[in-house]
Length: 126
Image (cartoon, rainbow, N blue to C red):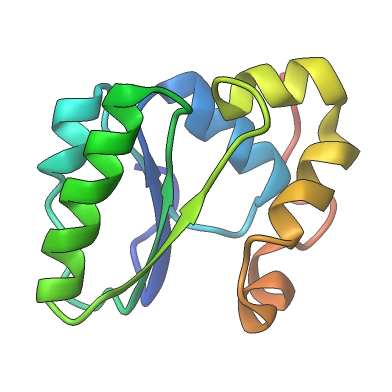
C-alpha cells in the first residue's frame, strides 16, 4: 500500500503500474495487488466509499476489473475504472511523460477527486 486507506483509493495489478500512478496522483492512497487474481480478491478497507481500479489493458485486467467491481459495489463502494492508453500506466508514463499521464487521468477522476489527489510537487519520479 502507498498512503493510508481512506474514503477514496486506487488499486491495480503491478507495482510499476501503481508507482507510475503515484507519480501522477501523489495524494491518492493506493494498493498494488501484484497480479490480476490478487486484484480481483483485494481486501477492501472498511471506510472506503470510492475505489479507482487501475486496469491493465488485457483480458486478465478486464476480468480483475469485473470481479473487483462486482465485489466492491455489493459492499456499497462506488467503483471507477482507470484505463491506460497503452498496456498499463507504466507504459503510458514512459511513452508520453508525466504531464500527459496526469492529463489523461484527470479526465477519468471525479471533479472532487481531481482537487484532492492531483497536488503538484508531492511525489517524485525515481
